[in-house]
Image 1 (cartoon, rainbow, N blue to C red):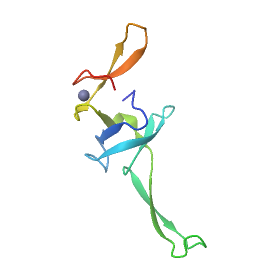
Image 2 (image 1 turned 90 degrees about the vertical axis):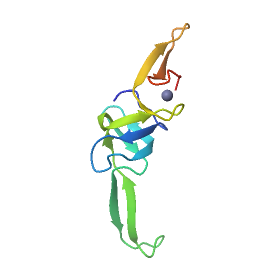
Image 3 (image 1 turned 180 degrees about the vertical axis):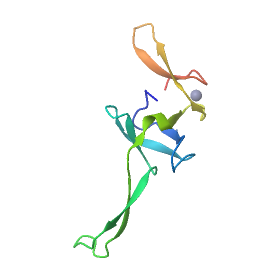
Length: 103
Ligand SMILES: [Zn+2]
């Protein structure tokens, strides 16, 4: 879905994390992917280093297709589609299609 921005709350619609909600940490518009907090985690085994003498397992997010995400409106809390509204001064704003509020 287009229009998702950093710090948006999103719901995962497909994949192993289907049904999870998270905050968008980064959007890669060129590849239509986003990094969402706590979603699409991979576990990386870390070798012990001087800074981290025990080593261990590190979880990190990997990008997910934006088309597999749906925006959760920060105003009404419902999952929604993004609409656009042109203001009288000509600027375009994102709106929630459920509550019509500007996001
Ligand atoms: Zn809304």
